[in-house]
Amino acid sequence: MSVHILNEEPVYVIPGSSLDLKAQIKRGHLEDISTITWEHEPETGFNIERVTLATCSGRSLKCAGTRPNVRVSTEQQETTLQINGYTTADSGVYSLTVTAVHHVSVSINVSHSLLVCTEAWGTDPRFSWRHESADITKAVGKVSNNGTILIITISPLCGHFTCIVSNKLGHSSATYTA
Image 1 (cartoon, rainbow, N blue to C red):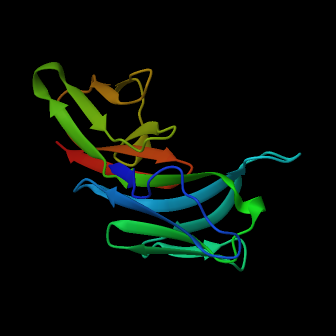
Image 2: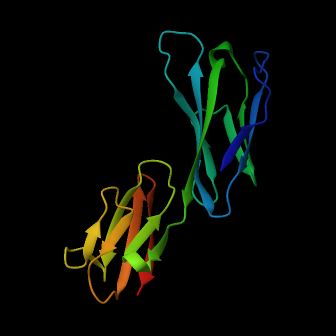
């Protein structure tokens, strides 16, 4: 996925007018956007901390601003942040975070009896394996330290092997049937 801010830097805004920031989002064919988050970090002041202005989530990327004058829209491959009634307190650094969920796939290396789980959730993925809906036992196989590979010791190789990938956004799985 790639995210490209369409505004030239820096952006100058007259107090009382509207600030419009636009970004283009190009996603891969297996990627689904799960969240879009616009944040602001003040340029000056005593409490300089990043504040979430708006979040878009869900399949339809429904957006919700945290203030009445903040609007966000998402259309096809573009997102726009609009702040109406801009004040000097709104000056600072704006950031956009786009989180995508990828599809899980399981492949096999038959010559070495390995199942490989691939996924690119991006943030803290955790991998786990199941055989016939039960946790993997030593009789079935051994899972690699990072969880992406299942070394199968059961013979003959048969059954339903499922890789589950999860993070704070949710989980996804893929099953290989032998």
